[in-house]
Image (cartoon, rainbow, N blue to C red):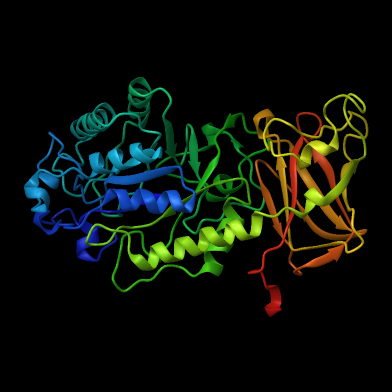
Length: 437
């Protein structure tokens, strides 16, 4: 979960000017425990805070600038938002990430390449040394059209980050660990590969949005995409805005998590320093809907067979593995024959058949992403088709619910050898009403 918070929260802005008086930052009721509780109830295991946004205001008492919480009346200038979040997250077993904006509209060194890069490195070092383990560090190349022209020393920044915290994930338009999905609406491409070529990517200039969105089946670098989107229209809290409705949030979920991506949902704290009650209520509704849809898997009541299985009947790679609770390391593996047409079929054991409108397919992603093309049939009629699967592919059926007895998943192309399917699910989404039905 992303937490956009800072002076913009108090000025009703998205991009601050850098001229804001730190005294406007005064979240008298700030409670990071409430932030993390909200994240935990949503099922989130990582919270990322805007430690510094483009306005240059720092949410921790940095020794390299006085444009920070030091100049705020909050806690008489002795507050530290980063520390409060770290403490709250640690108590609940939630990981912490940080965003440190490269573009700084306040600091006078911005525009002087060497001096500003040294300043930025110093602040990076401060954050990564002072606050314990950081799971993800967020970088971007955003800057306004009138910003001074200067270069960022991304390679030096990345090297220092890895030197200080070797297990950290670095996010940027070009990875190296996590990449931007190419939009801010939370949608991955209908084709979604974790592989991509870093040599074709740029953090600042010449961003190839479509390439980021789909990845590259011939890519040599494993850099999964992260879908960032806000629960509201803006990234920062605005009194005039309300959270997205449940339909929109579920649409985001199907097009991010359901397309083999990580969803980073922004939930901005308000001027009091709390996540607004309207947002908390909507997020509980969202979590409840996800649980309702996916807590029941109709496939568990089915028999299963496949076109073939590696190692024969007792080889350990039978189709029954797609119905167990291990969605990572047990899987169905077909034999090497007929490499462009493998299938696995579920069939209802009861006379009443099956009623569903969502089909879930998961690959054994620990062994790579392989499936290139697939189709799904119910009682011989095709109901869905797609390209990549990855960790999770969710087909929300375009024509709504179907009734049938047999569901066949055909794998019509894979790379790196045979496809490996770890799980298949048949679910009913009561909130899905295509064409107004």
